Amino acid sequence: MTLFVKICGLRTEQDVDTAVEAGADAIGFVFSDSPRRIDPATAARLAARIPENVLTVGVFRREPLEYVRSVATESGIGAVQLHGPEDRDYYASLATGGWTLIRAAAFGDSVPRCGEFGEDMLLLDAPVPGSGIAWDWSRKQVAAAGEKWLLAGGLTPENVREAVDVTRPWGVDVSSGVEASRGVKDPTLITAFVEAARAGAPAAG
Image (cartoon, rainbow, N blue to C red; front, side):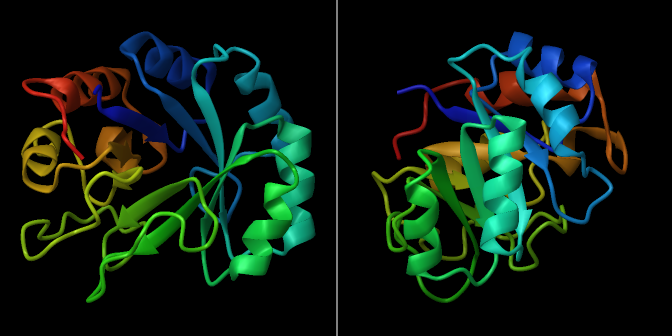
């Protein structure tokens, strides 16, 4: 199988075009408080440039359900990624909207399972989510093999191949690791990340 690669926190036409040309499978737009935040109208304009085979993802952190529904609808994204304490009922309500659901969970003592909350994909982030700080992927089993889970947290073009070889994820997610400065993407790094992630043998997760 081919490793699934998601590039997150994109804000410009150049960002989007570069990620698509590099072969990214998913592109993320941040709608929560962040240097990478964009408004739904901008996301809709950027999403219109993205081929249908590339998943567009809206990233939310601890937002009210109706806000998520409204933004996801206005922006025209295909998936909703949630970082927060949302329960199964929250996910079940969003599932009626037809979006692919991604649950972001921080690495901890327990091994999370994709689908526990009704999500379609699981994103496993660093112990301090969104910090962009690399963490010790080799300490223990990171997530269940054979499930749709993405490794995130401190990944860069320099370390992503090692991370994939060690953890065997279904996919990887990057944001700060392909930036020239905080919130500003570097086209060269985006391309290098996708190439490095897929170099060598494909992931077996």
